[in-house]
Length: 325
Image 1 (cartoon, rainbow, N blue to C red):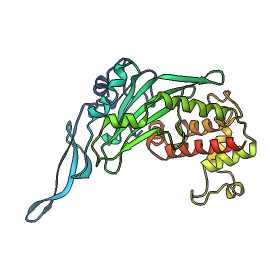
Image 2 (cartoon, one colour):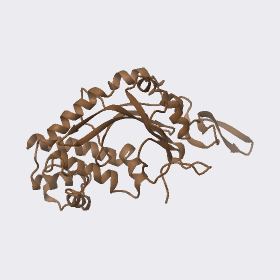
Image 3 (tube, rainbow, N blue to C red):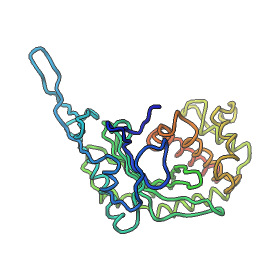
Image 4 (cartoon, rainbow, N blue to C red):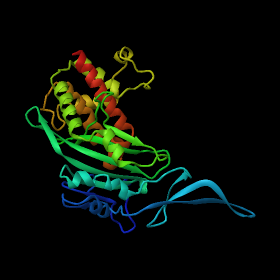
């Protein structure tokens, strides 16, 4: 089976993790007290990238272009083609972002790895804060740093809540006054301190997310509005065609039917059952554990692809329906 997770030439997966074995059982299990630099090495990410001139051949000989190849130090692998102005961020810089938090005891390194043959490197640290609602529904907070070595993609640092009972990666919709993520393009100089200040790291965001979860858990759905909600999250029409009015007139989509079928059997269905928190987590369960070809493609989509966008939309809609309830 093909994996999004990078497999090195020695057969090892480019991944290290704390706790339970993830996805396909790949990677190296490590203690919870590793420093960011130790996690970097454990995950086989202690390599650098450099820009080198890119040439094309003609009869008279090689001609240098204005483009540059981004090449990995360990195996000279071409990761992407960039411009001269493109500023790479080394993996060690991404991991050093967590140093102050780890040393202060506010976080501990949790997972790290490489996807798509080195084009996407990530590091995730668990925040030593969590909350529990509805008689045992626990949500932990994480900070995810994504460092792409690929043209067209930005560095992304985001607060990521995870629902423990089903290991669903949640999302946030805290309003315009609160940023749950910061993106930095590769034309800028990477400034870790500025990102930390902008993001307003973690504790305040987790508290705001708790308020949002409590609100969703306090509002009950009706069957008709629930089906309509799932059809808007998993539409049969294009996003430009979907409106609150016409969605009521179309047949239920196949994925919406799947959502209805797992509504009461998904892990954690007993918590705030019948509420919009219950409905929203049905979507996160489907995207993280059911839809897609396999586990690591699901993770890639949940963090970086269509399903991340879908979950953001699902939360916005859940709040919309809860406010109307």
